[in-house]
Image 1 (cartoon, helix red, strand yellow):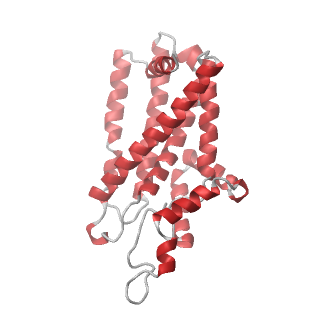
Image 2: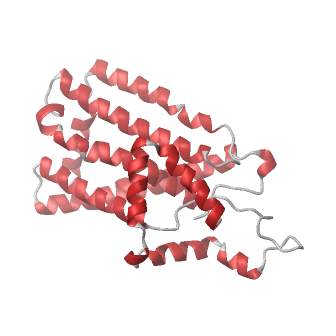
Image 3: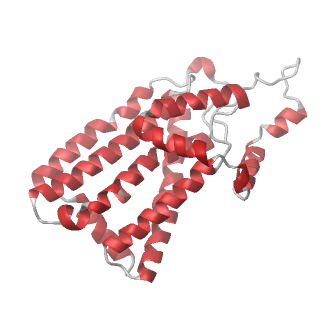
Amino acid sequence: MLPTTSVSSRSQGNGVLSPRDAARHTAGAKRYKYLRRLFHFRQMDFEFALWQMLYLFTSPQRVYRNFHYRKQTKDQWARDDPAFLVLLSIWLCVSTVGFGFVLDMGFFETIKLLLWVVFIDCVGVGLLIATLMWFISNKYLVKQQNRDYDVEWGYAFDVHLNAFYPLLVILHFIQLFFINYVIISDSVIGYFVGNTLWLIAIGYYIYVTFLGYSALPFLKNTAILLYPFTLLIMLYLISLACGWNFTKMLCSFYKYRVK
């Protein structure tokens, strides 16, 4: 789960990692430790995870400042506690059930939608985005003078989860209160409200992702991760001009999935 690996940070006098340190810092060992804690709820700090979820909305910079603190105290950037992932999964399940209720789906249709959203929309798309960002950051953003450091895949996935949570709350929770009465209606206000929520949600995703990679001191030119904002705003204006309703499209797609 570490985003950085330093060849010289924990070495012996001859520049070689001790067997104990090498074993403790392998990706497999870190992954095993993280997954093992998934089955020990008493070891999870849910209060701290809730604090992170709150500040991802109000001040996401504070969340990544805490990542720096973890690096200094535990020699690890990414979370070693799966509490955030557990709470995100609960949010995802509850909000998807709410979506099924709003769309007047039956029990089995809602379960099918839940499986689609969890394993395809969240896990599948998340793995794809994390892998893409891991490749781009290591290929093009790592500073030349810091080639001993690299962005590990686990941290890229952690950044995706941070950015995905605000998007989830906006599109799968807040939006639910407006779908049937405002958004789905064939009116200008309907697609204006719906598309504006999409603009805010995806904008949050882009911004929190940018903060995640700019927090790593060995990366350069991370401002390019904000460039998609231009395309997002253009697409938003075009959608308003053409009368596209993204939420209505999403609802139709969800209904088609569970047929």
